[in-house]
Amino acid sequence: MARLIAATAFATAATVLPAGSFASADGNHRTSYETLANAADNAAADKAFVRFVALRHPQSTVRAAAWLALLSSTPDAAIAEFLASGYEPARARAAAQDQQDLDFAKRILATHIAAYAPETHAAAKRAVNGSAADRERFARTGYAEAAARDRQVREADGTHAAALAQADRDFVAALRDSDPGAQVRVGAGYALRAGATDADLVEFFAYGWNSSARLDLELHQSAIADNDVRWRATINRLTADARAAETAAREASGEAAAAARAQAATAWRTVVEQTTPARSAWRQAEDVAAAQAASWQAIALAAAAAESVNWESIASSSVSTAAAWSTERDSAAEQARYWTALLDQARAAELEMTDPPG
Image (cartoon, rainbow, N blue to C red; front, side):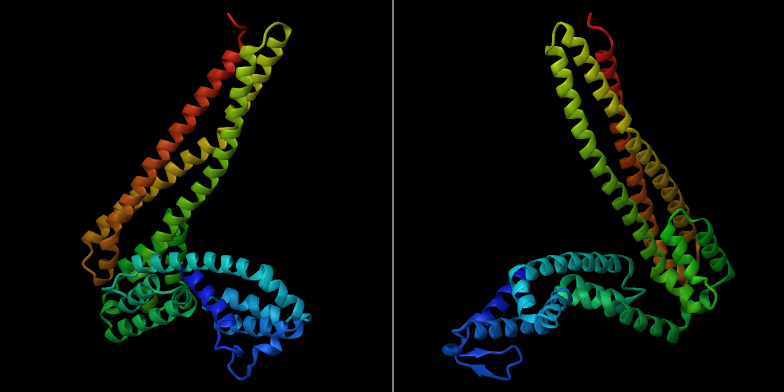
């Protein structure tokens, strides 16, 4: 809706002006409407409008597309193409980017708790509740700037760094080496990298651990969903074909019946074979989720027993993270059962079409 309003405003800026005049995008000159009556002046008006978009549009994706047209070696043609078919795709790309920026801001808001990262939490909240331009600024520079301010406060206070113990470093090293989540392993490794300081380890406990864990969960969910959508599209098509072949076989008679039943059996055998990737992947997803749930249950116990201020942030989220992975485990098991049932159904149908009719 915000983009629709913005686009309307841009169109209005180019067409609805005080009677008898046209204002350029930079406001440096005004021209009477009478001088825009010929094609050359229309081209000038289009160029001024595209410059307005290049300078004023809140989304950098759209601004960049407008600048490409303006700076083209054949600007008149490029501007005409931008207005005819370039602006809307640029807006669509901007909308997709804004959704990514919104997802990023929401993840930061959820994992950077106000008590431990107040500047970052506040900046993320403003981005989530703000405009597309606000979210873009947060993703590009705002997050890093807010995180730096939080870091300065923690370093000046010194409490978190002073509370670090060798046991904390050993725990993070174990995460780096053997945590079931790839993103947590990366985050832990970064906190302990050569040249890292106590402030890096404090940041890992304060929000890096939570953020990495959230990303592991989201990547797991996205990957299995993306794959399953493709599998279902294929299996639904193959199942429909097999059912149609089975119906044709039941309706056939004489010499054609045997050939039709063989064709139906082959169709159902194809369904059987195509259930394999999904069944295997969902079983693997169940194993991954079970390992993550067990790991986070252990982390929750460790956090509850810890007496260090650095563990407070992870203590407040580890229980919910463990519960989230338990839900993923149960959902994966349910999906695996669905694909196994489909396998059994297809095998039974294949066997029925293979056996001669009684």
